[in-house]
Amino acid sequence: MLIQAILFILLVIAAVIYCKYFSHHMAGRLFVLSIGLVLLVLILFPPLAHRAAWLLGVGRGVDLIFYLAHAFLLILIGMLYIKQKKQQLIITELIRQLSIGRAHRSDDARS
Amino acid sequence: MDHNDIFIIIPAYNEAEMIQQTLKPLLEYGCRVVVVDDGSTDGTGAQLGALPVTVIRHIVNLGQGAALQTGMTYALSQGAGVIVHFDADGQHNHRDIQRLVQPVLAGQADVALGSRFLNKEDTREIPLLKRFLLRLATLFTVVVSGIRLTDTHNGFRAFSRAAAQRIDIRENGMAHASEIIHKIARAKLSYVEVPVHVLYTDYSRRKGQSVLNSVNIVCDFIIGRLLK
Image (cartoon, rainbow over all chains, first blue to last red; front, side, top):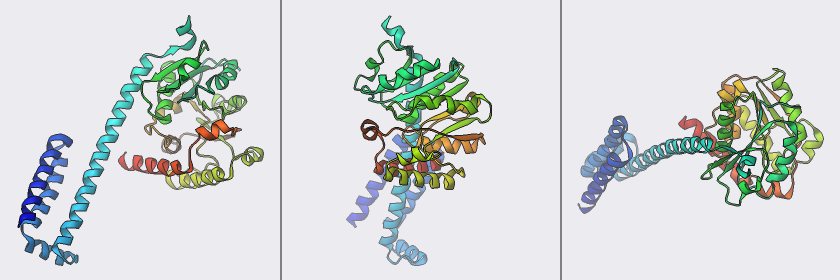
C-alpha cells in the first residue's frame, strides 16, 4: 500500500535526522531507534499490528500504531527539551563568566 | 552598620526609572552594592552614573534567577561574608536590611528570609489576589520542599557565606524563589523568617509578576525538578 511506503520513508528520515543531529548518546539512539523499529514493523505488517492490538486490548492495529506514534513523539519532545535546558545552562554560565570578568565600579567608569 | 563584607545583590532588568532611587539609600550602610544589569535595553546602566556600586552586565537578558546567581558568584569571589538579595523596583525597604542580616551575622541562622506575613500591617497592604496566590505558594512549598514558611516568594533574603556557597541557582526565571527554598531544605540549612515591609507602588505592580505567570513559575519549577 502507498501509505506504508510513505510512513516507511518518513520514519527512516526521522531516524536519520535524530541520529545525525540530536543525539550523540548511544543509549538514547538505541532507545529511539528501537521504538521506531517497532512502529516500522507494525506499519509494514498490519496483521501483526492487529494481533498486538488485540493482545493489548486496544482494538484496531491502526489505533495501536497511532498511540505508539504519540508516545514516540512525546519522548522525542522530552529529549529535545532536556537538551535545550542543558544548552541554556551552558549559555548562562558562559554569559555569567563573561560578565563577571567585565565587572566594574560605576564610579570608576566615569573617572 | 558598617560591614564591608556584606554584599547587596540587585538584579535589574529595565529599571532605569527607579534604579537610582533604590540604590541611593543603600549606599549609606557601608555595604558593597552589586547591580546585575540583566541585559536591560532602557539605559539602566547609564542611570547608575557615578554611584559607588559594582556593575555586572549580562549581554542578553537571562532572567532574575540567573542575575542573582551571577551576583552571588561574584560576591563569593570577592570574599563576601553575607549576601543579601534586594529588588531593584523599590519594593523593599532599605531600613529592613539591618534586621534581616542580624540573625545571619549573629550566627543564629544560615539564611534569613523576609516575610510580608509576620506583621499584620504589612499583610494588609498586599493586594487580595496576590495574598491568595502567595498563600497557595506556601502550600506548594510545604508539599514540594517540606518547609513551612509564611512567605515563600519574597525576594528579600540574606545568606551567610557558607549558605550561599551551597545554593546554586539553576532556574534562570522566576522559579528561582521556589528553587532557593528547596535547596535550603535539601542542604539542611538553618533559616529564620524576618518581618519585612513590601511597598506596592504603581511602578512595582507594573513590574511585578502577572497571575498567569505564576502558573509558568510552577511549571518551570516542577520540570526543573524532574530534569535534575
